[in-house]
Length: 138
Image 1 (tube, rainbow, N blue to C red):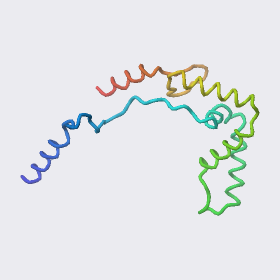
Image 2: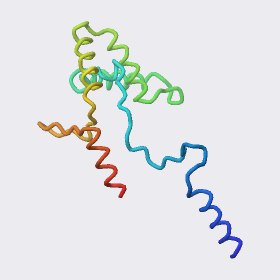
Image 3: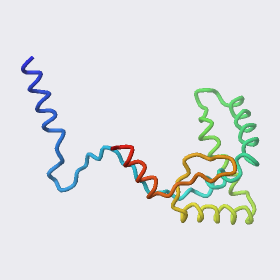
């Protein structure tokens, strides 16, 4: 029993202090993150999935699953992403411009959408989100 308590004591002693190398590599939680700019096909999907893409992706994936053996099939997500890329490349320049405007707007807004509510924009400022996360830690 004494040996077990000594091991526990030394484990906590070695794992509860900060590192001596100048930077502590053991960040427990990284709550603030950089916002990534969406790829063009991702923004295209975000804008047009419900109106244009959903029916096409569903029908093509069902056709795909009927023709390809199960052990060789891609997941629906991978298949949908590949199809969305092809559909985006075939789109008109007008749609591509709308997608680029949408990407620029998302990149410059500095907001994170936690959840979408009908008729109300529930975007939170990154500083407010960081403040809220730190309050939850305390």
